[in-house]
Amino acid sequence: MSISLRHIINQMEKHVNELKQLPERSSKVKEHAAAIRALSDLMLDAGETADENQWTPPSQISAPPGFTGTLPKKPQKIDDDEDGNGESIFDF
Image (cartoon, rainbow, N blue to C red; front, side, top):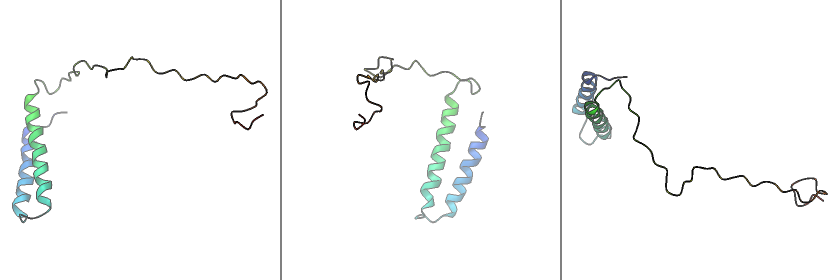
């Protein structure tokens, strides 16, 4: 899905116009500024991609240090007492 630069610029203009109408000490100033920053980042990132419609896989991911690639084995329950009838220590 591609977002046109014109749409991003229109959204930025909308936030700038709303900022112009707010008093300087309004709590909404930061919200609009953050939205403009996010839209700017989106526009800059869109310019860096070679082909917007082509997905490229990330570079090879390495395993964290100490990872062996195997899951730990679950301890097997050893039934050494045939007279017991459960897992409780009070089962005789």
